[in-house]
Amino acid sequence: MFISELFESIQGEGRYVGVPSVFLRTSGCNLRCWFCDTPETSWEPRGQHMPLEDVTAKLLESECDHAVLTGGEPLLVSEMVPLTESLSQAGKVITIETAGTVFLPVQADLISLSPKLANSTPSLERSERWHYRHEELRHQPDVIQQFVQEYDYQIKFVVDRPEDINDVLRWCDEFPTVTPDHVYLMAQAIEADVLQTKNAWLNELAETHGFQVSPRLHIELFGHTPGT
Image (cartoon, rainbow, N blue to C red):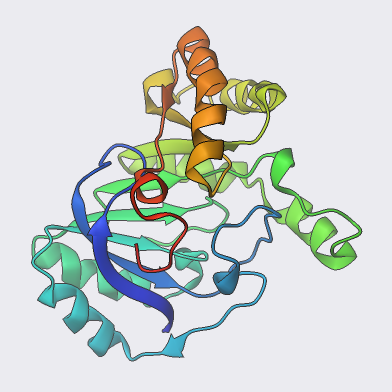
């Protein structure tokens, strides 16, 4: 497995915000969001190769009950299936953070879907190749539907500007079984002061449409720092 980070911290986003967790971050992604907050796993993927057995052992050594498998895109890694089976058998509460573009039959207590809206696509000036590839891959309705039907889930939308709510609403119309209480709006920012500014209008949008707002507690507490 190509691993970027393995560390203990608190969950900073979504349903389990504030819960002590052990995190596994894989390196490698099939998308290239212009605002990616872990470019070392996407635009410039780097890390170390670790055998599945070593990764499993390190995760099981943690006293944290919750394990968060993230990336990059962790579901590009076929070893996620046996890894999650081992973690589940050991009693870990498993969250998998994914963009929802690929499916694997993993064991998970929560699938944390972060669908990529049009606001995520990199400009032609930055990368013509990735502009078109990202736009082609970012929305996979069949994959989203399978996750929603087969797992407990949450949906986290990265919102950069107030007008992005229109894309969120169009997405929700496409998936009528997704109820608003499963939907979180999350500000696109990696600085605490920018988060605070955007959350002011994000809270109003969420209240209007019955959504929730996800904090980015790890940024508020630690800043944009690897391993937190």
